[in-house]
Length: 522
Ligand code: XMP
Image (cartoon, protein in one colour):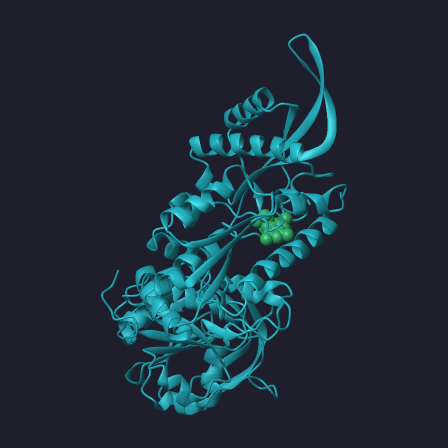
């Protein structure tokens, strides 16, 4: 933990968003360097931007071409403000364009890996090897840097792959330092942050907590907050953070839909109601959910029923608290913001415009929304969770789908089949943990198939259920590979499940990548 005052000045680097998909990644890399960073919209006026007192400004990439009508621009007075500026790709082109450089369309479009010859005396390339690997993606070239700039990097096709005006602390690169395909990228950012902008690098999960606590207190005043707790990482961290800020003016609502993993409901109650002493409303709604799901086999229908039922339960419980709750805390994290097409800015407290965030609350429920994790990626959320004292096994738990085991019991959902799956999954996860594989996997779980097959146990013929073991690796959930688990581990899991879980006589291992398969079976 740093000792900085919650509301005191902190070093902030603003990333101006010109629309590239990598922009949050830039902010995240900067935070990895220990410097707080936020993405701000390109429409933020310069005086507002400077009011953030940024230690530096990054002009990000973007899909537009600087010549186009309507291409996003920025106030060139930024370059006279004395704040260090680093332009990346579109950001560098825009800077050149606004400052009188010669920018043209590229004859040869460079895309993908390139070799860049760099000036190893430049602050952002200091003591590097003279040629570095980098990731390029552009169709526009800066032919001639603006007056006062010198060229500090070039490729075979790009005369100005990097340039700087060190006395004015203005830098630009044509390639993408934020992606893993530019192996020295983090060092380039560090060179700019520490070597040029004079950052100290004292941001951490601890200082984020201080900061967020201050912001939540300021936003909530003496109001009351409701938080829907699922037991997943995002809602757990949100609840712990809001509690840190406002104590018992937080009420958590945990809806047990009967589709959770073995021991999960107990753990949520023990952790939040017990250890954290939160005001926790535990709604055991298993009968309602399972009643509505009876006889349903279509995956999309299952999802719809569960979504609708959750809203009903939530509404009923929220109505009981009606008049007493002013705010709703949600564990929205940055990837959710992107997926729903939302704006990355917005800060921690913004008023609900539509009720889509909670799936359709009635119009007369006028909560304001608090989303303290909106700017963070999953691994940052986990660091914050650890900082807040959440149990590591909760913080590092594999993701679990909202519809729960309903999408892993293929075919009809019954209590008995859910129990079978729970036991099988508990064994699989226990063995995977014991073998030291849990943290190497993106996700691992068991699926119960709606087929039976013949087997033999002792002298008896069996006609039992088949379960699937699914374990996947990868960087994110867009593409995954099946995990090359050791045969001995698969063997142990198979043998234990078939011996210990009544009714299961066969286990198969899923060896399909995504795409073409998905991670879940439904
Ligand atoms: P798929 O199966 O789409 O899964 O490759 C990717 C990731 O998303 C999770 N998942 C869901 N999460 N509601 C959720 O909250 C859902 O309906 C849902 N479907 C899949 C899945 O567990 C994996 O982590």
